[in-house]
Image (cartoon, rainbow, N blue to C red; front, side, top):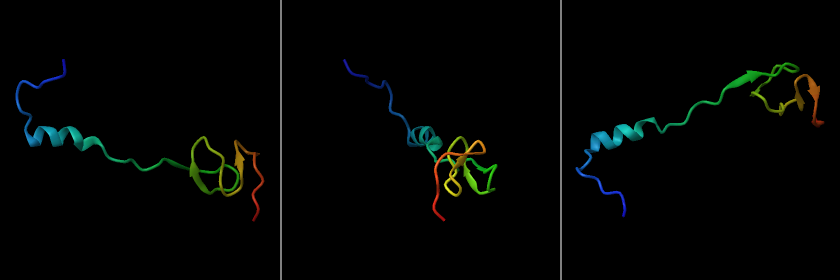
Length: 60
């Protein structure tokens, strides 16, 4: 058996359910080594460091 609604849902009720499906702005923090904006808990793309340690070498 499949789910069968008892009554019709109005367009306003349907659209208000979908109103919260929006994208959020990524939370950017300053890199502790170079000060560049980056995503938290990730390696910095500018200097290649994470937690003040160089993880990858970046050619400049």
